[in-house]
Image (cartoon, rainbow, N blue to C red; front, side):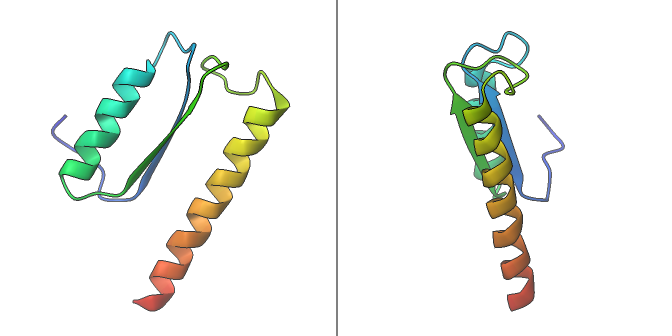
Length: 79
């Protein structure tokens, strides 16, 4: 991976995902952090790629996304 994002990244992946494996997602976030970026990974062990197979995981993705964006907004206000 040569062109890592310069913006914060969140990755949500299902433990049963056959398109993007949890190991690949973990590796990607590790690279982002190694290059000085901000990245967070959330794995939903019982979900597949769509993550909307349960109301619980879908709701969690929405809430974590909102919190992540709120943290970024607060960081921007400090600058």
